[in-house]
Image 1 (cartoon, rainbow, N blue to C red):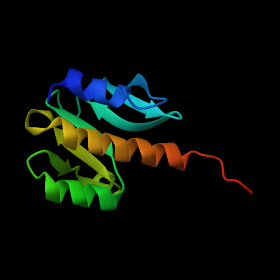
Image 2: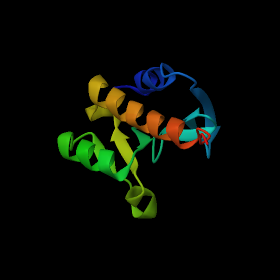
Image 3: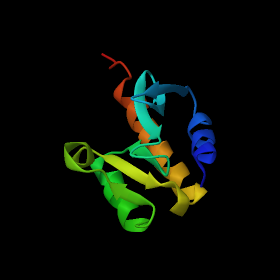
Image 4: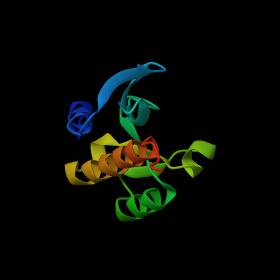
Length: 110
């Protein structure tokens, strides 16, 4: 997968806007970042998953997904090795991350 392919997959999701954060591209829904490109370097992307989804993807696609270091990784920040990534796996990860951020920001009904 290329950075442009990652970008295309992120932007195909409803309500997504591309922005920038700390010198690299990010993808947001409801103003919240769910994925980035170019961190820690141009060969990588990042998706912000739940710890459960992170665990499942890291176990299912070990050459592609890597838990980020430290507290960020413990909270679901998951690095994507673009060169090793297949479109279907990245699409799945982006959808999980997008849905997590989209739901998190919905106002509660009551």
